[in-house]
Length: 313
Image (tube, rainbow, N blue to C red; front, top):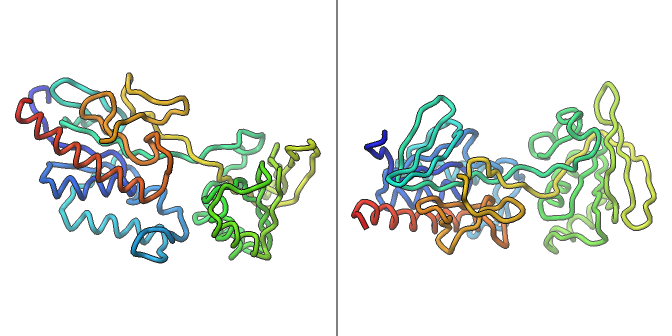
C-alpha cells in the first residue's frame, strides 16, 4: 500500500453529514467510499419526527435517513458496512484500518463519526441500562406503554423525546436542573400543554433504583434548596447532550477542551487532508442541516485538495 493510493476520499460515518459528503464527492468524480459500522443515518434513526428539514414539513428520522441513503445510491456511492479502528495520517497518503485488519489508502479523509449520548454518572445508571434506563425513546418507548417514565434534560432532544413518550406512557416527568428550558419555543409550548407531562424544575437525579423487574424509582434533588425526594417510575430516559466520538481523530489534531475537533471554514483540521464534520466538529449549532452543510463544504474542499495533490502542488 505504501506506493499506491486506493481512494481519493474515505468518509467515516453514515449520518446526514457523511451521506451529504458522499453525494458531493461523487458529483465531483472522486473515487470515494463511505464506511459506516451501523445503519445508514446514524443517530438520525433515533429521532421520531423531523420538522425543520427545509422543504419537508414533517418526516420521521428513519425516513429521512433512508432518503439520504437512496439519494447517494443514485450516484453509485460505495458504502462499506465495517468499523474503522484507526486513521493514520501520512505524507503521501493517509491510511484507514478496518476491524478485519484491512487497510485502505486515501488522499483525504472526512471524519463524520458524530457523538454518543452523555451520561448522568449516577449510581444505577450503568447497572440498569437496558433494564429501564435508556437514551433513545424511539428505540425503547414501546416497552413503557401505559407506564410512568422520567425524562432528564431541557434541550430540544429532551422535549422531543418527552412528547414522543407522552403518546405511549401514562405519565411523563421531565427533570430539568434549571427553571427554564433551553429548547425552542414551539417545543416548550407543546410540552407545557401536554396533560401527560409534568415538569420538575430545578431538579436533578442522584440515584436510579430498581428491583428484580427493573427500574422502579429515582432519587431526586432540588438544585436550589437541596431537598431530596423519591419518585416512583418504570423508566429513565436521559437526553442531556452528546460527547463527540473522537477516538479516531489522529494524534496531534487540534480539539477544544470538550473534545470537539477544531476546523477551519473548509472543515479541514490542522492535518492537511483530514476533515471533521457534523457533531464531531466544534461549532455553534448541532443540527441535521448543519451536519449536511458541513458534508457539502468538506467534500468540495476535499475535491480541491485531491486535485492539488494529484497535480503535485
